[in-house]
Image (cartoon, rainbow, N blue to C red; front, side, top):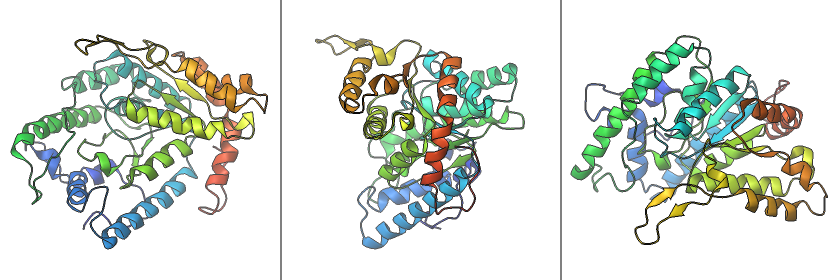
Length: 362
């Protein structure tokens, strides 16, 4: 199998991690997931070498989109959690995402993320342990924090023949240990697992896909994946601390909300960080480049954007009430619950043609 074959269902963690060798220091690279990434890279990465390759990848992604639509026809209200892949497993922002995702899963929401490390992993970990007791969750956190940081995996990994470059082997050994810690933590979760949905891409296939989700809509084209992640999260989107990728998702969401005809359809945007990351400018030493305080101040910018966008509709305040900078779990649930009806209608419209009778959940 090339990995490009069209499918009629989403992936599972066991399918993506098939071939993993726990005792091999490069066991992560033996998985089906990494093998597909290697093939994707050798076939031109984001610029396929032939029309045949492009067509195979497109057929795969189209089939995944269909499988995702089928999956969502029976899913609970979908809440996106976006955030940076660099967030470490010991940071307070990571641990708070774990707690929030656990709380939201217990409140009958389905968590969806981009399926990578950092804030995304934290969301799936929390969702999986939603029905486990605190002792089991803390055991899992203790296990996963033995390898708190994912190594630097950006940049070329292979030579022209597809072999791993010698100077990158140590990074992949560290990635293996990072994934192995997650798998040990997963083993500590008793049944039933809390469900969650990951929507990753092989564009970032050098990073291990989190094993904590219960379904994976994995794409080759990142643009399709981003559209699926933002567009499907109609109940609301939560933004944990993040960088460039998270900013792209924020402003994709801003664009969709900008053009909404009715304030009732405006999707809630929740900026979630215990240190007010989205409400503070970064503090950077101009001489050394050292960052003493992280932050990207968005509250004023977003207010001005939507003041302009909603001026003619005269519903600026109504829309602004759906943008929150908060870490209050009950406030977040209250906002998401208030949008349940409009989200249900929007999801039914998006999934029209993919299934017959749709359920009464968004």
